[in-house]
Length: 493
Image 1 (cartoon, one colour):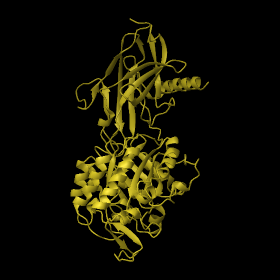
Image 2: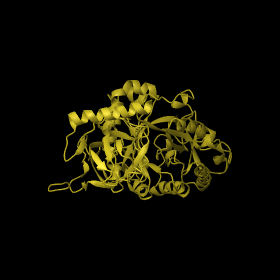
Image 3: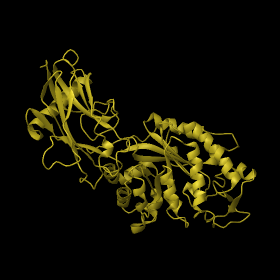
Image 4: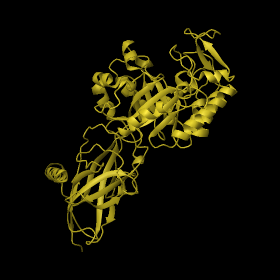
């Protein structure tokens, strides 16, 4: 019954478009679909929940095992920031279930995960983010107190991030982590988080000891040594404490992407500082933005109405934004902002026009036209190819035709509603130089593609026609194909 309802709905919309939005032109059907405004879940972009957040108590860890906050729109991934000492409390003895349990919960819900493994914390509840056995093995480090003073009786310990023993033990830990998670398609990225307090690449909140660019390079090199397939990410604060942009230049050259953990820690013009760095990363790799803990930002008057988070997403061309708080509380307080961000975060492929012949003989050529625009702030980094699928009255796939000469990654980004449209159309005088001619496919003969009326769907995905990307279009078949209308196939020439 569901298939029949879908076909009726598709045919109805074609009738509406034919009367109201489409026009006949040489026996062609032309439609102008509207963006539905829906929040999209797509690879390489979206909101991220924080599961663990430098300890094992925040934030979605507090949810019931069955609770994945399905009402929060646009969440594609879950971020776990936890300490090395939680994962390897004794040398060679790993507690991976701390990661694997929530990972499988969120994977079951269709999400990816991302990690940061930290080695320094400024709170008494976690005095050893690096396992204590590393210090006992002879690694140099510094005891410090809550006043950030290095003192022998300080209750917290931070390693010397250049110490040979520390780096050797870290090397073995990263090897074990990479053997388990590197190349897993469910892992979106891993931060280089072994340097600095909270893994942010600085010691401002702990010992305040400065380190050189070379120290940053050593940590990047260790991650690159072991994580050969999963995206690695550098923190914008790699450049502070006198290191300058050289450290991030090295990260960029090693194929790392960028994240900024400090959005709306401060108010107004100080809401963020390093958007200028993002240009070195966003055209090729996803940029991640983490706002300050929402409740803390709100209490100190930095959050305001949150519009500066959206502005940061615009300025950094961000693909990911984190929900740095309890998700339902954040959603209740910021629903309109979340909806506005969902229209811009990452990429958003809009089909602004499509055309096809109303009737075509089997074994003849079918000319397809369309215009696409990326309404997001970031390129469609995963890429993909448009495909036309014909379905019969029982929703069976009768024909698939992929446009391998139109890669959606090439769609440029722009200001809201101003990104360039790239089209397949009849080329002529004044045509935009990036447009392409109408695409022609040869239909199968009549004994394969039987004469009849077929629903015509569009999708974006692999070179073999498998749909991958969600589009803001109506009439989804449940597999990321979207019905645009119908086409009649006759018995042949």
